[in-house]
Image (cartoon, rainbow, N blue to C red; front, top):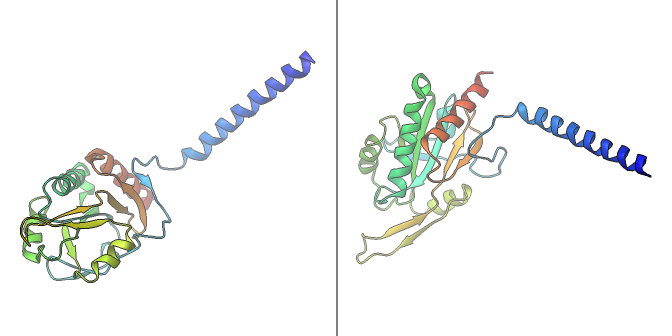
Length: 204
């Protein structure tokens, strides 16, 4: 009986080691993304919007670049400027690959976010970034297609309202496919690291 137990233990140990090695081998070829991998998700597929220069935009316009999309509004006091500054810093960290990064800001406040205001807002972070918007009637459909939450919170006057909204960023690869979701305040280096991996993947 003792011999059987010892043999069984050796077999279990060997099997565990093989599984561990097999797991390492299987995972070693996959990029270790920092953000949440949502490759193949059935949402955040595309958009058809107008940028702050009046040009119609879809994801196809940015083929060859890694695209990072954030939903917010220009009068946001903290989350939005923090996220956009982090995005700008991530682009700067890419060095000579920075021109393969496209930052996009989609407004959830089309009542107040005029093209002029959004143009100035983008320029304060990075002149290559674009702000996109749709009209108030189409915004709910767009938000649903990205699983983005937003809610108007009334203020003391009709124009002093604020907005509660989702605070993460969506990352698309150079082919326009949704790949990652970065939570709020993940850090510029984390975002830059994932962009580098997606660019390296595209260059293979």
